Amino acid sequence: MNSKVLIIAEAGVNHNGSLDLAKRLVDEAATAGVDIIKFQTFKADKLVSKTARQAEYQRRNMGDPADNSQYAMLKRLELSREQHEELVTYCRARGIRFFSTAFDLDSIDYLHSLDLGLWKVPSGEITNYPYLRKIARYGEPVILSTGMCELADIEAALQVLLSNGVRKEQVTILHCNTEYPTPMKDVNLKAMLEIGRIFGVKVGYSDHTEGIEVPIAAVALGATVIEKHFTLDKTMEGPDHKASLEPEELRAMVKAIRNIEQALGDGHKTISESERKNMTVARKSIVAACSIRKGDLLTEQNLTVKRPGNGISPMRWEEVIGTCATRDYQEEEPIEL
Image (cartoon, rainbow, N blue to C red; front, top):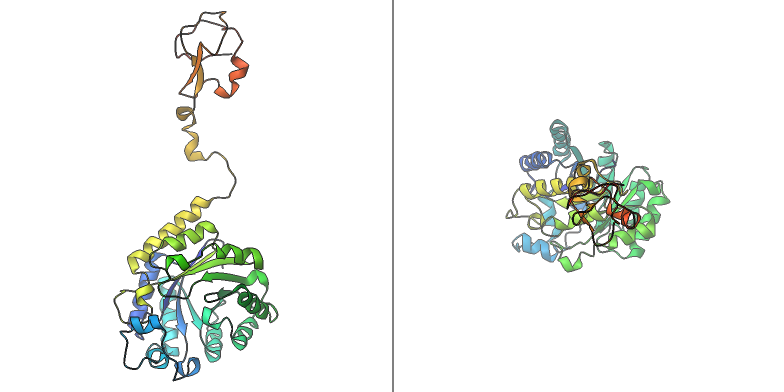
C-alpha cells in the first residue's frame, strides 16, 4: 500500500477461463499504468450450491442460458493453480503487481502460499465470519468492499478483522454498490466520507458505473484506492464484461486519476511557481488618471488603478490619498511614494 492512489484493474473473470485472454488483460493493464491487476480465485464446488440461480444481471449478460445456475457459469470461469502461477510470473515480467480475491477458504490458503501481502474482501463475503477470521489471522493489510451493506454490516465485519489480528491502520474500506452497472442515482458517493468519519479508516471506492467520471470524483473526495472492472471487449459473453471499461477507457481513467492526484496538492494555499510570473501582468498599480503637477494633492479624482502591477499596490490606496505628488505625472504613469 503506497501513498499515492492505488489503482486496481479488476480483471475478475473477464478472461472467460482462457489463460491467453488473461495475459492480454495483463498487457492492457500494464500499458494503462495501473498499480495492480486483480483476478478471482475460487473453486465452484466450494463457492456455490448447484441450485443457486444467477443474478438478473448475470443472466442478462450471459445471454439467458438454458442452465442459469451460478455453478455452471462459475465452473467455466475457474483458473487452475498452474494458470495462477503462470499469471504471477507474467505479471512480474510486465512490471505489474498480480493480485486476486479468494471466494472460499481453500482459496485463501492458496493465495497465502503466493505471498501476495494484501487481501481483498469482496462485498459478498462481508457477512462470512469464518472467511473474515481466516484472512484476519494473517495480520496483513485488508481492503474491504461494502456493496449491499448498512453501517452495521461494516462495523460487524471490521470488528471481526480487528479482533483477529488486523490493525485499524491496515484496513481500507471501499464504498461500493453491487449492481452491474450501477445507476448514477444509487452511487451515493458521499457515503464514502461517512465511512471514513465513522470508522476512522482509509477509504476508497469500488466502481460499477458506466464510464470513468465517478472514480475520478472519488479521488477528488479523498479515495486512497480505486477498483474498476475492465475487459478487452464489452460485447464478449460473460457476467461482468458489460459493466467494465475497455482498454482505452482504462487508460483515460488512470491518466485522469494521476492528474487529480497532482491537482489536489498539499492543501496549503500559496503562490505556485507557474503563476508567479503572471502577477505583474494580471494585477494593477495606482496610476495617474490625468496629468498631475508636482505638489498637487493626490485624490480619488486624479488617481485610478490599471495594469500592470509593477507599481504601488491598490491595497495601499488609503495611504496614498491625501498625500502630495512628489513630481509631475503624465496620465497612466505609475505613482511613486
